[in-house]
Image (cartoon, rainbow, N blue to C red):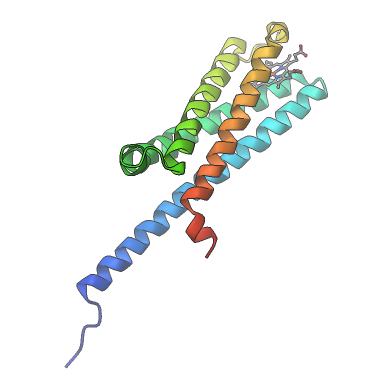
Length: 165
Ligand code: HEM
């Protein structure tokens, strides 16, 4: 007689583990994208320092596009399905909830300001209008760096157990 070792509870546990792996892969993809955006911001800033203003504008536009893609494909779905119901609603004063709220606020502000700046420029040859927006761009960059910092902190909080083995 053939004995079936795969019990329903074993199947349930392996399904849960598979789901956890999928979630880990998704949030790790989000982390990788945030690190890429961070590199683009630093690279864009260095281009400005070398007075390559057009390349600076183009690099910042790519950073906005890459960040927006991550926001719509990964961050919003994961916030709506997991973070809001499991943390913000049920445990609002826990570190993960607070960090996620700060991350959402800074992230939304940074991306909105980035879109605004790129849209005002509209890839025109003439970027003279950008020169008097120095303070605006500096503020956008600082807010953006905070958003990325809190995003990376959030990833570490959510995956602490996995990262620590
Ligand atoms: C989208 C997000 C953007 C961010 C985060 C950003 C960030 C910055 C930062 C941090 C500076 C240095 C400010 C300072 O020296 O204190 C700067 C300067 C500058 N940026 Fe951007 N920038 C962005 C988009 C653009 C765009 C689309 C253009 C258009 C070509 C542009 C053109 C310039 C110019 C011309 C300067 C020199 C300003 C001056 O020295 O008076 N930037 N940017």
